[in-house]
Length: 425
Length: 159
Image (cartoon, rainbow over all chains, first blue to last red; front, side, top):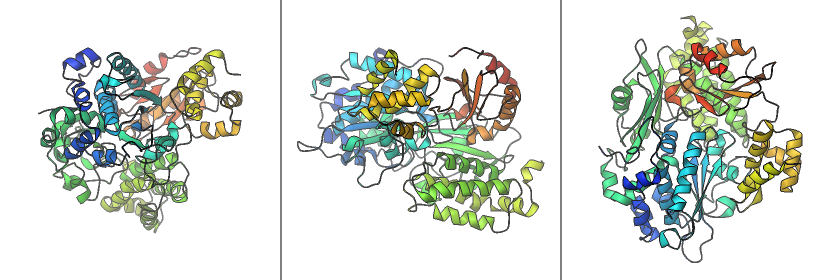
């Protein structure tokens, strides 16, 4: 099958330089795009049904289409690349950045043409030193070839790309938190509306796209929307980088048709469970998605089908819970993370997450009391969608509410027995 | 006062943005790279360079966990404690590191060689458990491999 995201990536070898990348068909999309009307490029991405790969799945072409265009539209316009990748259990953008930096850079240039942005900032997670180094090199090479700088390829567009390495905090990956971090502020969320494509960095129109999303763009422009749609086993277009971690035989990443089933990813690609371990459940797309269990192996991992069974595809990197790890302790680990990373901006999140984590801690230690599970149920509602300023706390409630649904007996046993059943074995 | 090198590196970053404050996080990182951490004096130096109050600089500095407002050792160990590492052996690696270092998370060894900090997901979950020392990522860490990793970072050197 065609693998537009990973075709140039060879594990253990350095990424292609610009000459090799061009020889492999690279920068064709940029040359084609700058001869097109920007709005036609956006239309192509809409027709290809590319949806954001950062976790939320917003249609990419529609987001680009929100940017005010034309003579009277505000300038400058910006593109911000979300390369923060701080969702626990997620490691897909690292592969794309380290393995083929020119692919994403080509997507950045096409996106900037489509929204007529003059500056792009690549917001990189602080830990991705290798990605920063290969991207610096790729940007310098693209400058030399005239894909960046003044009047790129004679198109009339001036374009500069800068890397901004973060200084930590999960909130910096939240769309508007990222804008504040880029402005040199605390990465607290902004009120929406207005949405960033209209009012973003320094009040100017700004599109924020994930790394994998942008890396998907060149193939759409080069081969066309229909070609991209045909790659998929879903109503939406393209391939997806799926991954698995936990006690599976072969943890890793695989580029597969969007809509590949959970069972295929876990069995055929991750190789099933390690010897001596059994599958108990999984988070299909990072820490802030609801658990799925063995009854969901036939569910297609895409934006619609996973939602129908009460979860989300999220980042598509699956975290597997095995039978020998305590589900209460796993959820406690997740809620500790979210409590620590809450920016403190709004009260339900700042106060509710530590409460949740402490309660889970007490239950796991065997100090849970009757009524504690109902308190957790209540928190899942009070910190849920619509109750907080951004999606951090609602995301944190997804693994909790689903663990309470699927593993409620395990929670109850902790309280009834006054001890963690997994600790004794 | 900022050194000439610090000021030059900060101003190179400032040129990337239409607004000076945008380079504040870069400035904190530059000072930390040169001085190991960001002391009150470092905050004041940056504030002066940006024409901001020290409180406004500290407001940003204290938000980001990778800006160190306490002195750290020659090497900083960042042990991932997020979910994939927790599922694959975090507890054992954590215990071994505590034993070998003789300090707990959040502390610096007596000889000033290591500061041991918890860290959330490092984005290498297919090779969990993982940790970083300075800028190096160590994958598939086991208790047996802890000594070998630590040996690469002698006291008094900064990588």
